[in-house]
Image (cartoon, rainbow over all chains, first blue to last red; front, side, top):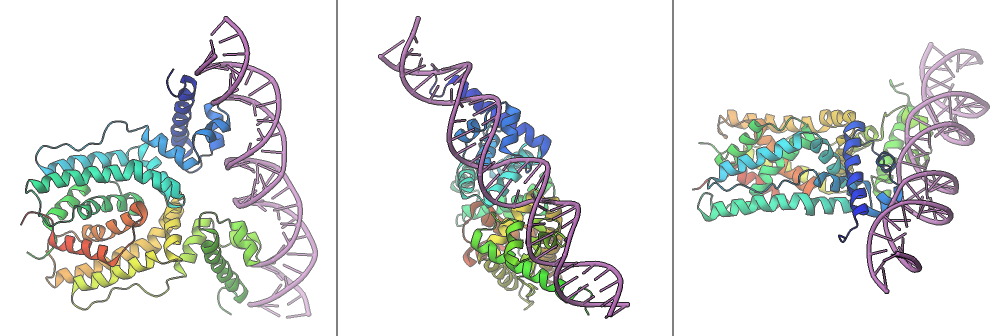
Length: 191
Length: 191
DNA sequence: TCAAGTACGGCACGTGCCGTGCCGATAGGA
DNA sequence: TCCTATCGGCACGGCACGTGCCGTACTTGA
């Protein structure tokens, strides 16, 4: 009927669902493809036929979680829009199962170039582009300094978030996000 | 003679050296403790007796590389001192074998709490503290806004660096570091 | 509707590494 | 010199890898 058969689609869904389940229970590091296949009641080939690595399966399972769009609001106030958007991202990265799963995926990407490429293309870059686009709109309206590099602004917003998430492992509070935003807009030089 | 015997010390050194060698050749992901022991001409117990995990060995081997201190200069100009210091860190993170090894270690820390704790205690936190201490000195001298949170400033300096290093994987150029510094000091608001 | 083709679950295989136990050899300190 | 901790070497059971094969179930198109 559909381009991919009903049965095939069901298998794909079942495997990704099992991946998420088992991830929560066992911990995302100690997962084996073998265990996922066993739990899902599926042959190992059925997994290997669809994904080339554990990381690829991890990424797809992750993406299947947040089908709700992460498009920016545009209320006319950049700062408020950025704030609302980054709060949403911080909440997403905090809450299980997304948080721990995402952490594991970033780790996986560090030693698997294919996963790194896919993660960047399907998650990180779109997010970056939405941020830069919203900033661009704001600059056109005169809300921002005209000579400020918007890619850099994006990095200054994202960087400290990832830094907390991956390095210091402190909670990604709204307060922290607000501090970063304030600093970015206010600057640090002497008054 | 010493608290740890001569022989023991030699073994420790040999294992860490082999870890670094094999890391460069084989890739830091595909390393096995078994292979390290074999190459080093050492029994597996001799490794396991010293380190509880591959990540712990990775960390120690890494730390043995940069015994040169990373203390900040203090020329009286914070901005210049930060610039010089972060350039050094960026260079360190870029060049093999430190760069790829460090990447692998951060990945390891994402799913091994012990490694995460040790990495933070022995590498990340000291680096943070040195930065904050240097900023603190500068603030006392009136070089910085008195109400700016220095931990936040540190995060805004480190975050974008890690973001590039781990997420976008673009090169950590001096130019990029300078941009971040400029932005932090100048701010982004309309003129 | 039915034949051809494909995807499937189950099973087994060889390989590599894990972490541990046991051995006899070795070397350093009392 | 002797005593003891550490050593290298070897072997083990266990697990997961990725692949092959077999017989079955489903899908598709003539």
